[in-house]
Image 1 (tube, rainbow, N blue to C red):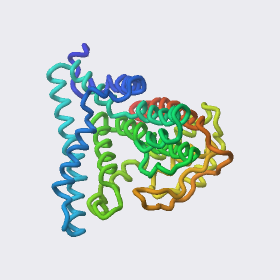
Image 2 (image 1 turned 45 degrees about the horizontal axis):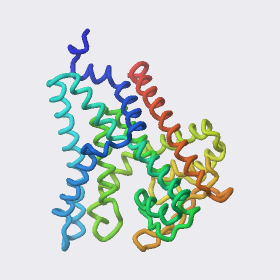
Image 3 (image 1 turned 180 degrees about the horizontal axis):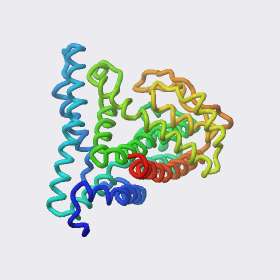
Image 4 (image 1 turned 90 degrees about the vertical axis):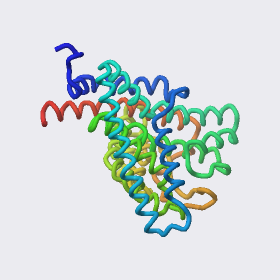
Length: 334
């Protein structure tokens, strides 16, 4: 059957593996295209607009909660349905137009290159410009206050954010792509963006962002544990301490305020022989966190290089194993 005569569902199925692999390759090679509008940026602007309009002062806690539930429920569902409709329109214009749009969107919704690049920039700054420059660059990728961090603390903070965001920026988007194709991937990114903008425990967002935070915890439950597994596999390929990674994972995976973030962080801590987590300052307020891992040596700049290598190898394994899982499901189970 000529590919032009394939139906929408058939064309999607036949092109799926190539789309996923090419999207990962494009993201790893080029990162986010700075000169092109990013869909997540547009989603963020919509969330910020609704936050200003609906999360106003003088509201009761119950009013904030109910409005937050509406925002966190209807934005992902509504925008995902819109995306599905646009994809159908692209298909009817021309199948090639549909395939190109699908590939480009999948590529934009991954964050492998940007995550690794931002971490590498911190290491470059420490080597060439000094600790002040490194603190400034680190502040772009972590939520904690960075002005007083020492060099070892900068290294550990970078390792933490790479490990945690490997789940959010790579594994979870791929997981939902494999399960529900591009609309599922887009749905996940919207939920994750809602949490990153509204999921704070302060007077403004404690109730308005509660449902968004809980929804993000739910959708990340499986991806976070898969991310830990992929990092553990990758630690062996990278010549790191895979045995310690496994031991620290089982011991410390729950030593985090988040139900999910501790899983990939524990593997990274064990593989590198570092102690992550602990007490930090956020917006001038001290937050006490448990420690993840055991510090077997002082952190050094090379740990940033090691965790970026671990990230890249784990991403390749994640893509291969998730696609293999999809194939096994379709071939032998479904």
